[in-house]
Image 1: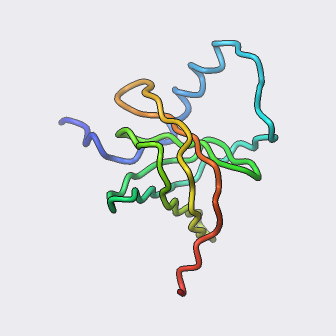
Image 2: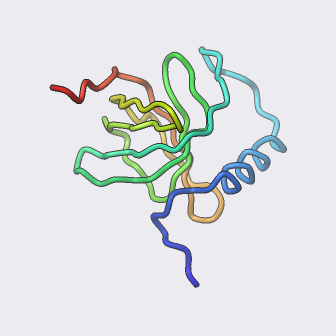
Image 3: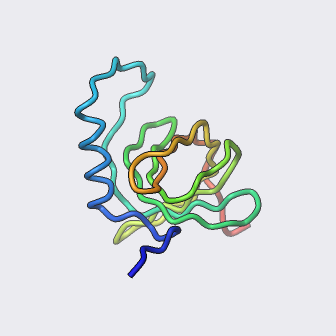
Length: 118
């Protein structure tokens, strides 16, 4: 049975991608400290398309994501959900690049929290 090309990545997908990167040494050039965070996310593009994702890491300024399908560098909304909480942020996608198994890594800068009551 074929895998849905738009299905949300699994934790195993994320583990394999992160292990591949850990084997490639690179200098640290980030401005903010990152914390590992693996929760489900839903990205809504400016055209209204929804891309299921999983977070990789988070900082005060932004977030890293793993998903299927390329996302343009644009403003999107990202819904982060855990067992007990849910947040919706405006995010500027700064970069998106392909990785293993038809998945993409992306990173973006937080623009603010979305107030869904308004």
